[in-house]
Length: 147
Ligand code: ADP
Ligand code: MG
Image 1 (cartoon, protein in one colour):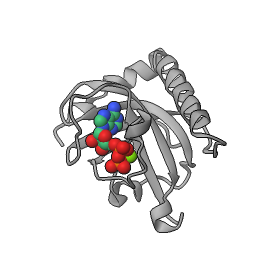
Image 2 (cartoon, rainbow, N blue to C red):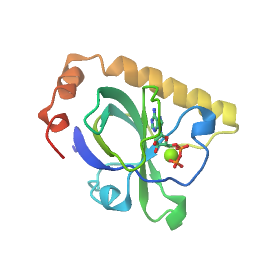
Image 3 (cartoon, rainbow, N blue to C red):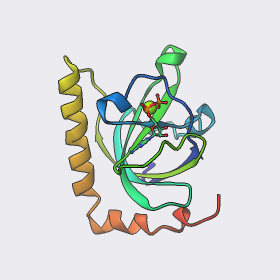
């Protein structure tokens, strides 16, 4: 089993799918980071911890999906940090640890249904991350190592 899985990389522009307009911005990792994902990490929704640069460590949800830009032959990793930032952080280093899996990817009949599902994921992530075994990973040296 590949969890917990630690990963770090520069935040790059996504596909401009307007996640921010939905109120749920997702920070994208470059291909080089995505290519390192172990083969047994399936697509779907994960939760864990994230930090931007040397900033505070926040809860996060991450979608690992098939990347439409590459005709679904490559994966993408998109992290929504559960925190309100004053500014965008393109070009900064995002560090994450994925600690648990919520559900597989699926398509939704409406935008409202999609947003409801994501908000549900966020609540589940917040709750699960309070478990001692998960809180422990927030303190991992990974987040304090100099990148
Ligand atoms: P893109 O298609 O470029 O990924 P999004 O609409 O998904 O555009 O917005 C993602 C960007 O929003 C991130 O790269 C980051 O700079 C910024 N951002 C601001 N707040 C957050 C947050 N809480 N979680 C993730 N990204 C955020
Ligand atoms: Mg995005």
